[in-house]
Image (cartoon, rainbow over the protein chains, first blue to last red):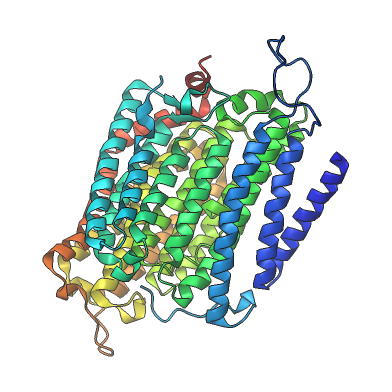
Length: 118
Length: 500
């Protein structure tokens, strides 16, 4: 399971960075999304995956005796997911507005000299 | 010592923003609320600053969860100084916004978002938990996205795409760094991390994490190979927005770098050399970029980049004197850079343009305002005894102590080019006679006295803060010295947070 996740995270990061380096707006957007998901999985992986060991101290014990699933990474991922959801939705709207204004998907086309600054 | 007052500078801006959402379409009420909120924020952060200056580090455990398990807020002298400077800048910018921002922008929630941004800045300075700092950074960037795009002109949106893409990338690097750090240490509390990182067996992993944080914060602070988003986006929004961005957003990246590389991870030689190289190249590229620009705000954008190099150089030198110099420069820089963009906005109100070729004759037309601006420009270039002069002495002496001649050379060149650029701007904008064709537009003379005051008063506030920093250099130097002591010896910080 861990090995599989490691490969998956590697692919998500590589694909995300590659797409962000392209000149197309849609690919930039997809790159941001993949990178965000890769990052969330990384937090999950580094919290040491444990199966079927809830972080609850047994009734008769005072402390944990066995290894247990760390609840903190899940809280972190939840926060990170909500944040990346907000950022991604902003990015979608922004890129759509820019596309309607500039009429091109090419990020190199975003260099119109400003007529006058405000 | 535990004290709940730490969080008040954050809360006051949160409540101001929420209250303004209630008065969504009443722009006059929003302006009054905004100025009141910023005044209260200023009073509270001044109170916090004096408390920390006299009584040492204060902490607050959120929901009374004991550290290192819960989120902890820590006000040491560095944090509380920056919170104080933020509140001064915010006050100036919100007074300027009352006239400088078009009503159409206010109707789409300019003021609430502005307060959310200031709240995020204060939170990022005060938190002692690294994941919580990530969350505050996200609060800052989402608010800055909205401020940058509000109004929706073409140049603005184009600038926003570059700004958005690189800032999201920076956040992802930051988050990756946090994930790796949590993976090897199992904690997120900065004081706890500071104790656990040296115990990690595989120190090469720590170096890898340092690089992730360096890249993430480096993009936000706009250092050499990562700064390109700044000059291509900061000239697009209204001047009030550019002022808060130019004065504070890059500085929060710098703050994070200082906090991380003094408290959490003590960088080894490789990282220090990388920091030093970045600093030298940042100074040079920023300075050379500023020479060729003809638009005032583009010029200022490159000067921001140039002067960030000075501060990063102080971190790269990694000695007590260098830290004191860098912190002093940071204090001076926040005031001056905010003011520069407000001045750019004021010049635009006076003449209707920011293109230096089409400007001129301001000294003949407005001698008093010109003299006020001259004080700021002198502070920026570091003419003694004004504020830019003192930190440079410290930086020079730190660089001589470590025989770092590349840094000395770039400091000299950077200061010299700043002087040249500012002198050229002065002669083109203020001394040269105004071009006949087209005749200069003038919105300023048509404004009511109240509105005129609200444009000039913020420049006065920030200029007098700069004067205070320059003429009261002994006090500021003592503050910077205490901060650099805190950075070299982190035991008081750790003791205040963990209680041992």
